[in-house]
Image (tube, rainbow, N blue to C red):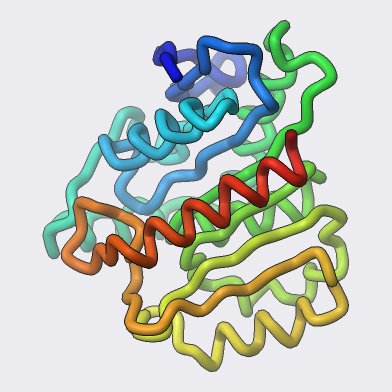
Length: 234
């Protein structure tokens, strides 16, 4: 499917920030906020937004580092990882979730989105933010890829009103399997939530620019994700 891409401005005045938008050429099925890793809205996150649009959804990837510096784009070298962690450490999760809410508002105000449902999908740090967005912003669906730090917020799990899908790797050194099991336990009463653990997958297994990329698991997780959005968003 052909798509259109552009940068737009979310928010107003001093609280405005850039966001990357990918729009399908056909009538959209709905909208998805794509939440970045600690590397900014880089070429990988833009490619995820593009793939989301190709699947039929208007995708918006807000620049969540704007409070530190807008338009930060990092790669995946050790130096990039250190810099990304530094930027992330300067931000408050509560503020970042509010920025995702502003991105949702941008989508909902688009004429093609009238009457359409909206979801969130995040990777790494963005996985945590997507989880918190599900708790606080009431999207119609949420997808989490290897979101670190979620156990710190499991007290909010009971607030999640929407279906959720979560993807983790059993070799992820930053998210131990024990943490995944804590998440499973917290979600066990939510029959509309699925937690997948991929054998032999490391952190970042979905990103084809990282050494931890696992093509088979990335493909399988993406197919599950698109099917999930078909059922929950449209």
